[in-house]
Length: 339
Ligand code: ATP
Ligand code: MG
Ligand code: MG
Ligand code: MG
Image (cartoon, rainbow, N blue to C red):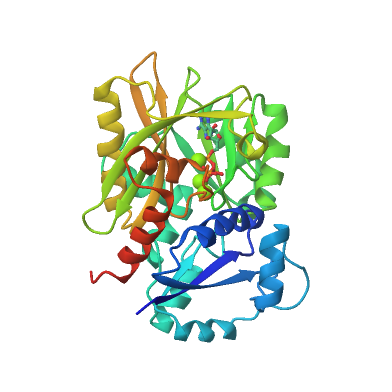
């Protein structure tokens, strides 16, 4: 019998459009002889769109706005064998939707509540990874209320780290709200931007030398495997939103030209992080490699990475011999696996 799959896309985060692109690719790739797939686009307001509006939103790459948050539609997920929550960022990749699906008793692709929530929050991720001895940049946390009431103590934390530094909303992706701050004069603007998007903000030291940007894919539940290692190269100051999503701004190198020993360290460390964070199904783990010193620093873990046919995660597994459609099929299989 064919498996009935509910594919969720869009969502309420700043990565809504990116999710629609990913979903279009997954929808086209799930083999129809094995799966009956129903896409449902979630609007930026949280409305689960009916079929005709969903189809239009996927075609246009944009969902209609307006309307209210409609949670009870989740109950309609009951008729499905599994859900593929192809949602990025808050209210999708952060454990919220995973909690809803867990309550409804429906298996789903990717990490559960714990792995999703902890991996989405860059500060919680860093704390967990530090506890298992994984090397990372120096960092500090700031919360919105502190920034409003004691801005000087937040500024002092930035001074501790030294400039340049990075300011990021703790729970976002696609580089939305991230600034590279070159001097103290630019700090307030960067903090205001990040606090406009999240209650929690992370300040991160920059490495002394410009790092190489290394990414690796993980696939599996309690016996996960790591993909070949990839590298991103670009001209921009850092891997910002425009560089990520403008055709031709960045190039992907798979396998990354790294000494075999370094590539192996990337894979081993990523698997260790995946386990420490209780991830499941899939994750893309991003690293900084500092060639001059040989340091490998784990940057972050993405539990629902970009998933178009040209995205890094599927490309990494393609290099391992798994086609895009085999990969999505495998992910649904992992969702249905007893654990
Ligand atoms: P993704 O789309 O991968 O989920 P994200 O929004 O979660 O991205 P990060 O991966 O944390 O953001 O950072 C985005 C980019 O900013 C990195 O790829 C890198 O180019 C730059 N960057 C972030 N933090 C640092 C740092 N501490 N030092 C140097 N560069 C950094
Ligand atoms: Mg991320
Ligand atoms: Mg992300
Ligand atoms: Mg990243």
